[in-house]
Amino acid sequence: MLFNSIDFAIFLPIVFILYWFVTNKNLKLQNFLIVGASYFFYAWWDWRFLSLILFSTIVDYSVGIALSNTENKTKRKLLLFTSVFVNLGFLGFFKYFNFFLENFTAAFSLLGTEIEANSLSIILPVGISFYTFQTLSYSIDVYKKKLVPTRDFIAFSAFVSFFPQLVAGPIERATNLLPQFYKKREFDYDRAVEGMRQILWGLFKKVVIADNCARYANSIFNHSTEHSGSTLALGAVFFAFQIYGDFSGYSDIAIGTSRLFGFDLKRNFAFPYFSRDIAEFWRRWHISLSTWFRDYLYIPLGGSRGGTWMKVRNTFIIFIVSGFWHGANWTFIVWGALNAIYFLPLLLAKKNRNHIEIVAKGKWFPRPKELILMLFTFGLTIFAWIFFRAENMTHALQYIFDIFKNPNSYLSIDVYWKYRTILILIAFLNLIEWLGRENKFALELNHTPKLFRWSLYLIVGILIFTNGRFNKTEFIYFAF
Image (tube, rainbow, N blue to C red):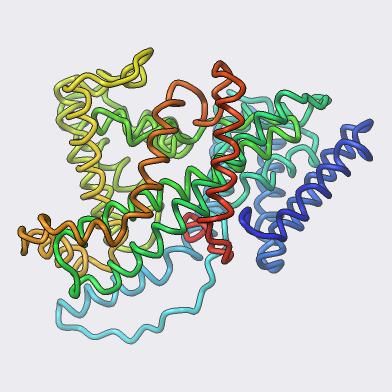
């Protein structure tokens, strides 16, 4: 079920009414309703893969109980291995089987040996990259004794399958979300209003920004040899805002929806395109995944505590794994490696934490140096996004070459005039996000005059109905 569909517009109020007016006096019943609603939400896409979610839930719940019943190191390691093997085994089979098979046969072909191997027609279960990491972190935290395992199977099932963030995050930690299922929830009007604001802004970013950018980005990337360098550069910009509007829009809707039910999910985006260096960008982009890899991969490997070689090694590992997490294609691996190359000079020079606070805090405008740094960082990000979007490495390299083959095309005003509507919408997005950059999301704006806030809500609503694309376009991260 898509957030940007009439199905969800019917589903959400029904669940909301049942949750607050029918099951509100019984916590266990409320949690059971969440599980049932979440499974229904997922089954709307393909009911056959519910068994994967249920199996992962049973395995990690059982592993948690078993870990609490033994102090034997060998048994504890075996139990953790079971959780890792099941979760990453499912992920590896559905997402990477054909990739490894194709590269394995290609490697032998280079050595002069032909191997006959048929790839499988595998459907990638939506959300598998998200909920497997979520359940896996639970087992790891219980193993490390950072978390007391739950014996409430319904609460744990609700944690694993919670429908607002089930298929595209944020990737929640059990330490944050699971305890919220133990506590009685009281309806909070102010929290619900805040949730509706965030849903509104997330919907704007998805159906107005992302889906309109997608129309142009897809056309330009799919026929890249037919376009001028300036159009190709615009295509990369459109994809940058497509993926941002799409993914951060999903996160906004997920977090806002959770607030309607009395839950607080972790923030997943913090205005990343206002970053002044790539380290700041990665502290603000897909925060739940970045921190997951930091805590469960980078730090266990030694983090940045060792010598230069260890710092370089660990940086490349975490970024390449992050790229590979996104998909079984060499373009994603190169995208990750490129971000590692961007990040390393900052780490080695110990400047990776120079920009912790949001840019120009308490001011209307950034300083000239800050503006230049933001534009430079955005340019680096756009360049990397070309590899992320391209069909393959050949396409990516040809696309980059073609951007620079005709410099005169950048002087043609006709190119920019052709895309004037979407460029104005992107400018509006950036304006509102700049004004709200010190808040948790752009439309929070609690301390602005009421007339301004309601005028802004009205404008956003009008733009959604006049420029939104309601053709049930899936979110990009459903494919990851």
